[in-house]
Length: 452
Image 1 (spheres, one colour):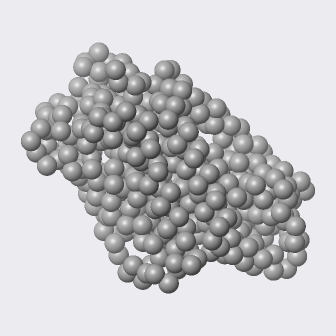
Image 2: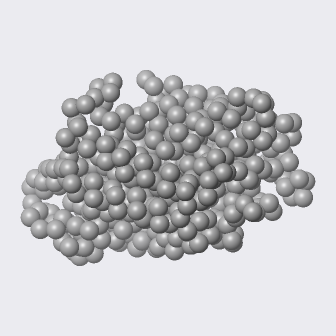
Image 3: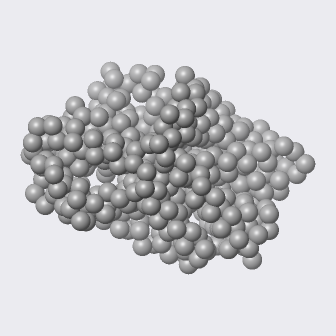
């Protein structure tokens, strides 16, 4: 019998956990900073509803209908055609991402450990000139070192394996029911603290007061990309999780709930970061990727009373987000091995996770001793990141939208969104229209922009 989520709350918690990740916590603020603040936020929200939710509904419909892995659903709907390769692209993308995402999750675990021991701030006075450079040096030395990143990468892989071995209800759902409320509680604590900092109003003004003159084609393209990636679209995660949905699940309600909660996380992160960096005069510091969370924010905490506790809570939050993401990404391949190759769950989990003990260390070492080995001028880590983000994910999403809009059996989306007519909804026609005419164009724009 196909595994299912045991409760509606567990279903939502697990699916939100699969969507919420480092993209919400470090990519979103970087995009806001680079694209005009509130102007980007408004366009981003519009993109979530115009592109994100319809594509998510497409993945939900495929997953719940198929009750199988990302490849199997296409074989079931269109047997004897090559459309199954669309699902395979998602599986490959998810595994490529997992190979370096476990490394980043390991970084967050190390910083959490250093926050607990106090080592992170032992030699760095936060209010001293040049402390940003010291945090940057510390991060560079750690990321490029050999043994510590490897150790924590292995720890993350072991945690993922332990959760995945327990299955959908006892592993993924149970952990999500624990971690997602914790994540929102931690975010709420940080929002309250950040809004009480002196000068926080300047950060709020930048984040929430739009200057519509700053909305440019680049802002729109970046917002489209962020809405696509922040919801974990195109990598088979949502198809896989939807295969565990009970048949009576209301897909539209679920997609809107998950998207709004994912959006809420991004907004809460903005309400934390922009008041904090403005308060301490760090708005000129880099918001790019890992620099924001491993350099800029540790300096913010160093300048606050109770430095250690805030650092512990933040890196705990970051590790929770990373862990729920790696588990969901790993489940894509586990489902494929279980459903398509007919392996037991134990064998499937081992087949997926054990090779990471080779692939992930190679990604980690490419930041250090293997840094001279380059692919198209990039390290192995950066190349896999670019390949999955700029090529595989939008390609998978584009093909899926084309399939649902032009190839899938007539009325498929309407049947799925209305639960075989039991819950009529006006949105079914609109979603089908978007998937047929609008989503392919928008995803193609994301695809081309990522290659330029």
